[in-house]
Image 1 (spheres, helix red, strand yellow):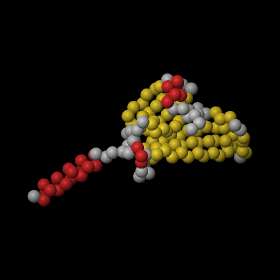
Image 2 (cartoon, rainbow, N blue to C red):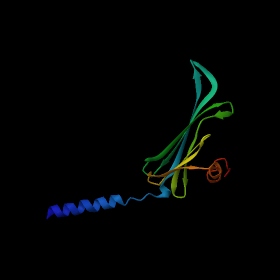
Image 3 (tube, rainbow, N blue to C red):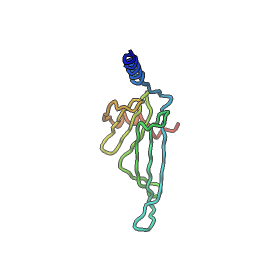
Image 4 (cartoon, one colour):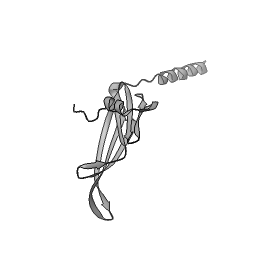
Length: 135
């Protein structure tokens, strides 16, 4: 009889764990910006290395999605290869990647599970993800 009760308890616990829901109000984005000078041998140059790190984090502090964007800047001009950002949009986490070869979007649900990866047109990219807009 004890064996049946133990089996029933284990099955109900597994069902409760499987019905995990992720809440949009508990998911937020943390942005980190690092900047340090670039060196050639032991001399500082006018160039700066900049690293922008964006993470989508849930309420427990678990990192769901992470994007790292590295650029090199000289005075006021920055040149870099790819543009990477993390955006919360329509109850999903979008990891945005744009370069001169095209734009890609990787969509995740609020639990961090990958939904789809797709290429989009540059005009749709600029309309949907307007990063230069002033709020």
